[in-house]
Image (spheres, rainbow, N blue to C red):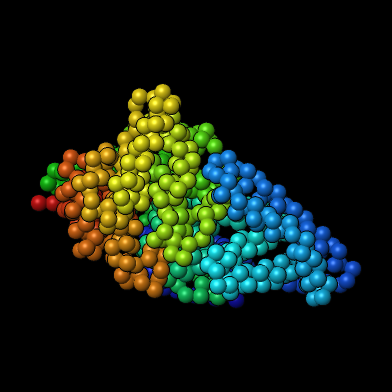
Length: 549
């Protein structure tokens, strides 16, 4: 034990730097409530009634929440989508469930949390052992119910990452999109994730926030506890736990030196265009998800907003937002970039991004299943709600609408048809620009047919690499195959540029934000890059030092 810090002795770990920068802060160890060890204690017979009341109150709370969710979804989508919540409500309303809780309480004298875990784990296991795939999927519903009840028992009605204290280094095994929507650069100074390669969601969000992230450190939870002092270097992947005084002082000097260099690059970025040594101007845009990000992108010299992600807004709300709420969010968020080039991507859910109020049925292979435009075509009310809001906002902002996960020509024409119908209904004559996200080899190979229906293309290299290299972005077991500047990926980019003709093409994937890949990308003919707001100055500076001829 270090007598000066009150912490355990200093320990140095090495992982993989996946978001550059250096930071110092206090650890917050995060785990999902289902995998968290809640307190186990025995009760006496006089306490059975009290614990039973706690469970019944929690169930009542969850039933009310499910009822509200079902109503919202039926209004916005359809009755079939709402039926999922009603089925969960029916499970909790079954008298035999309460009877089973009471039986376990009386026989085993465990506290309420442990009883809920025990019973729902058994229920989930029984469903998953059934032969019918539909019933097997109900195991996920049981886990969801268990999670809701445990949160209610704990008095938790908000995500545990919503109110992190300033100066926090978040430590997690992995982070899902529903976790990261609550992160803010005002509170989180760094991220450590056991399972996080360059393309993992945790790494992507860390780069967007401009905070360092280190991944690939096994058994993090055995080495770090909440409150530990952490020094992290997201460039070389070094992590120091509870540094001694000399290490801490040396790190502080490095931090000051890093910040001074960063300030100089930002100043140049704000005052100069990104022009190569042989005179070609390259537009450098920002990938953003909030007003905070938009402000940062413009402040750091972005020419506009190349990709506004809408998923965090939908993931962070407890219930399905109205058209007006979505439009108000866009008005507020985009205001700092008013008058500049702005592209808003339609809600790209499915796979690892599912709002709790939609509760899309689970799939055996979600990354090859219903994602992006596939979900929106299946739920046309969800598509129309966004298009109405975007049409309204486009009357004040020069918007482009990006269609995610395009594979076929129909994916584009369906959106264009709905946009024109809704604009006629709203009596609007000026339509936003329409763009297609090129994230699949199928889309890249059919540019000649797609360009007839769109005004621009945006290449999402994260997914394009995933599907070209057959390597899951979140799968550390095949990370060596996730090579987003591989010759096959670069050839597809070249093909898109060649086939697009006069239709503008931009890249908004992570490869565009890496200094060592910028020259290779620009030599494909790309004239516009969209990168995390924090990376704009570095990429503009790199472009100014490249000769393309």
